[in-house]
Image (tube, helix red, strand yellow):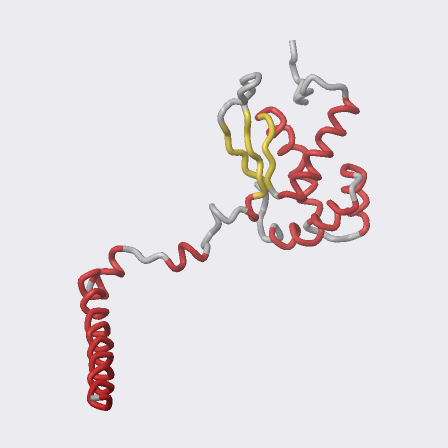
Length: 174
């Protein structure tokens, strides 16, 4: 029975599990998105979110505590620099787990874990959504027919100008 056992052991010893979660956290900080098994992703979320919360207050004490978990200077620089600026106003929930299809070799449940603030697809407003027009705004301008009629006179004026240039050169030559 596992009454009161809240730690997911991931079939590893304590030292192996600590090293695994530390490495996964460093990779998540570096790449902002990683693909792993669902069980590891759920354990990683529990491990990484308090570390990201620590990074919101940049002082020597927090840096040393986070370094004791991660043991990677580059990850610490990235975490206390870029990431802490993005998550400064977020009260929690820094990661998102998205389930993926099962792995072919052993049919393990796979998942993608990513930092929420660094995803451009699900962002609040991207350049594509800002430039995208809705149907309602297209109707207000007159729709596709109005756009076609506006471009048609421009084409005829350029053709007329080309015809006059041709006729002028013929008169000069002939």
